Image 1 (cartoon, rainbow, N blue to C red):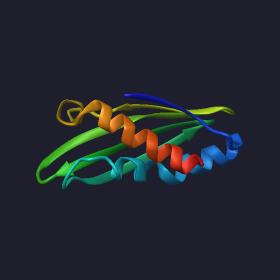
Image 2 (cartoon, rainbow, N blue to C red):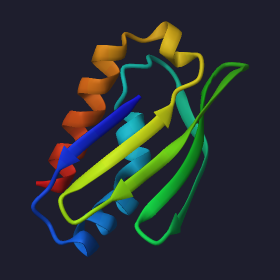
Image 3 (cartoon, rainbow, N blue to C red):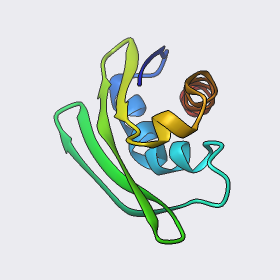
Length: 105
């Protein structure tokens, strides 16, 4: 899944917003009774690499990707693993995009 969202913040402000919010974005997905565990994120310049696990019972689904922040936009590239097969792609895309837009407003 790839999402690019324009912003009007400074690059530093956008990086701070992304840093505080990446795990909240995935918690808001329509995943039912899943919980998010083992969240990790690292920054290299203006690119964050992240990973987490969506867990339901004994089932665990890794999610990983990058977030690149430029002066004009934020681009999220995420691999949702098997959730791509279970969740409607349009719904996930819309949910993530809406939450990121709210955080960058």
